[in-house]
Length: 208
Ligand SMILES: Cc1cc2nc3c(=O)[nH]c(=O)nc-3n(C[C@H](O)[C@H](O)[C@H](O)COP(=O)(O)O)c2cc1C
Image (cartoon, rainbow, N blue to C red; front, side, top):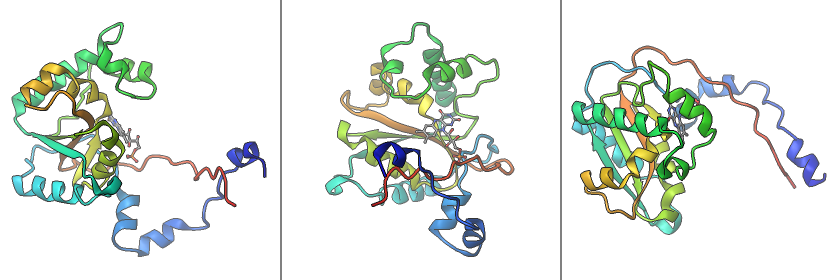
């Protein structure tokens, strides 16, 4: 098979993966049942909850076990509201500022359009925001794996990365200037069920 043909090949969906997952327990089931949760109750997330999540997060793998992450936990309602407002404002500025351009966010035009909507809520009203910082730039991918380890209702908020890379926000949170915001994640108790989102079958580019 040529590289081009291989790129075009997609895996046939397994005959009944759902049936298999339905009977399984543990990680496989968690993977299929995880959702980006965008509606939360007012119930607060306790210190014990957060500590458990962070302990799970640091069990993610990292290159040469470098564990390059650091966490900022934000639960102060007024601070969250202020950051939601300034993070949204940052996305709306035209032309986009340097933090937005350098954020690596895909489909920036669409995200900026979403942020301009009247009822846009950057943090989805969640009571807790955990920002994962990478202490070294090469640590970024490892921090995404750490995020994956979090439980409870969560939603990654890539759209807030520019905000947490702003010099004044880092200074306010006492974050060293050379750390990079890898991924902010809201955490809370889900208000109701979240429908699963669509997945394409795995694209197998090569199998030799
Ligand atoms: C790196 C990353 C950044 C994301 N940023 C946002 C965001 O800013 N706002 C949001 O509502 N969802 C965000 N999401 C959630 C995705 O939209 C969601 O994972 C995707 O639509 C698939 O849905 P699912 O997680 O429920 O399967 C982000 C996800 C990832 C992995």
